[in-house]
Amino acid sequence: MYRIVMVMLLGLALFGSAPVAAQNSGPQPANPAAEVQAQQETIRALLKEVNDLKARVAALESRQNESRENAGKQTEAAKPAEQAEPKTTEAAVPAPGNLPGGAEALHAGGIKMQGFAAVTYKASDARPPEGGALLGFRPGSSGNFAVGDIDLFLTSQLTPKTLILTEIAFSEQSSGEFETDVERVLLKYDANDYLKMSFGRFHTATSYFNSVFHHGGWLQTTADRPFVVEFSDHGGMVPSQAIGASITGKIPSGKLGLNYVFEYGTASIIRPQINVPGAPEIEEHNGNEITGGLFARPDWLHGLEVGGSFYHDRISPAADGVSLGVHMEQSVASARAVYVTPKFEFLSEGFLIQHKVQETGQKFNAPAFYGLISKQINARWRPFFRFQYANASAASPLFSDISLRYGPSLGVRYDLNDYIAFKTQYDRTMRRGFSSINGMLSQLAFRF
Image (spheres, rainbow, N blue to C red):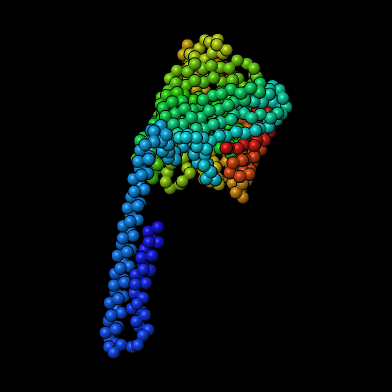
C-alpha cells in the first residue's frame, strides 16, 4: 500500500517539473550555461524528494509490521494454557527411530506413534509338535498362517532431555485369540552422553539382540529371533524383561568408545514348555535382578561392537501355581561381537546360563550361542545364514524341554519398499532324543 503512495507522490513531483521541461522546448535562452545549471538543480531537488519519500515509506512499513507482531502476541497470550500445543523434538530411540526412508511417524498431539506387524506362514514336520517360539501357530498342524505380534511403539518428548516411551504388543495365541501386553513403558532422561537413565519396564541388557531388536519383526533380517534370545513368554532362555531402573552411557576412553550399562529391577518371567503344547507354563517368581555390562564401539571401525554382560537373580519356579519345590540362583553371562553396516550384518553372541539349586547345591549349566551373517544385494535383496546352538540338561528344573538342539537357517529378505518386506526361511533343527525338524517360514512384515 505504502509503495503505491510513494509512486503517486513521485508522479506528482515529476508532473510538477513539467513546466520546466516545457520551457526547454521553446526558444533557446541567451545563456545556455545558466539553463544547464538550473536543470541540474531541478534534478537534485527531485532526487532529494524521492529519497525523502522512500524514507517515509520505510518508516511506515516498519510501524505496520510492529503493530502486527504486537497484535499476534496479544492474541497468543489470550489463548487458554490448555490449548497451547506442546513442543516436540525428535528423539533418539532404538531400532524404530532409525527407520530408513525418512518417513515421519504419525503424531497425535504430543505423541509420536509407529506400528509393526507381520503375517507368517509356518510349515514343520516336528514330531511331537512344538509350540512357543512363534505364537499363533496350531500345534499338530503341518502348516498354517498366523499374525503373531502386532506392535505399537509410542513416544512423547516432554522436554529436550526427557522422553516417554511405550511399547504395546497384541500377541496371537494358538487358540486364535489375542492377548495384550505392555512390553515396555519408560521414563527416559538423557542428562548427557555419559549418563542416560530409564525408569519403568524395560528389555534387559542380557544380549545385544534383546537391546536392539524389540517386538517389531520388520526390524530384524530373519523371520524369527534366535532361539536363545527369543522373548521368555515365547519360549526363550534368557530373562527378557524387568521393572526398575536402567543406566547407560559413554566412558571417556578416546577412540576405543567404551560404554557401560547397569540395571536393577524385578524380573517377571513366565515361560512355556515348547515341546509339550498345552502343558502348564513355568512361572519363575523372580526376585530382584542386577545386570552389568561393558562394550566398545571403536571410532576406527564404525559398526563394530564388542562386549558382554552379566545378569543375576533368584527364582522360585512353579507350574500352574504349584511350586516345583526348589529355590535357585540364576546367572546369565554373555559375550558378543557385532559388525553392522547398511549393507552388511554380522551378529554373534554366546551365553552361559547357570541355575544353582539352593537346597542341594546342584548346578545346571546351559551353554548357547547363535551367529548370523547377511549382505544386501541390489538395494532390495538380502540373503542370510544363521546357525544356533543350545544345550541344557534333561534334569534341569527349567530347561528340560530344550535339551540339546542346534542347526542352520538359510533364507532371504526382499524389501518391496521402505515399509514392506518379504522373508522366506528354511530351518533345520537337530534334537537330542527326538527326530530332526525341517521347517519353512514365509513372512510378510510391514511397518506403519
